[in-house]
Length: 237
Image (cartoon, rainbow, N blue to C red; front, side, top):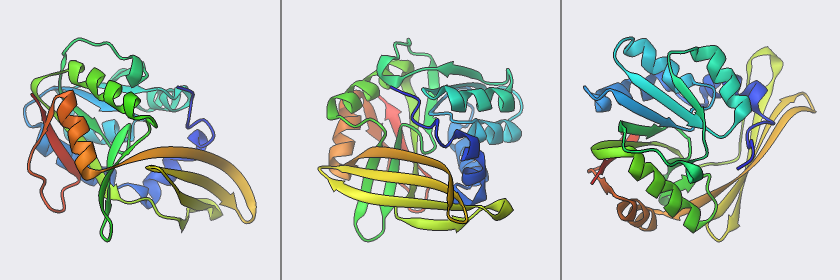
């Protein structure tokens, strides 16, 4: 898998911390769900923003590992986190780890739930083929201990939008439904009419029933979803 966020990496933190995600809220809910579990894996660590918030809330005892296939993002994560998190350049389709983790979580990483109030809930994936998603979830299941947790973040469904950024910049996202369970999303950072950064991404989107079957087949049992929760929780069977 190529470095799919190279085009946006320089502006990523600015976008994510200017209203895209509430990392403090995600971190608080993660701490509550992790409980006394200590060996934790982040799927798609990006520039390390979620791990940084977790370490602020739980400064001692957590053993955090973050994986990402984007070297440009990992370089920023290493500057942010130093040796407090074990950061690995890892493609989940090639991951062969033995069961080691008590918790795996994703905040908009490899998989995430997209909640459209009018059109139901879908699982979004950066893996485009069905066999890739089955293989990736299978590899993940082998890395999580039986009884361990998988926590996938929930956010609003992708929509076209614009939002101002600091220093006179503007963030623009254009979302298109390509049919056949795929959507494309173009991210732009603009100054006036000038494009400073552009990222084009395609996502596979699964209806909830299909997604739950994929997860169950890989070895993850759903826990009752709480209304308004920021994560959907699964148990490794």
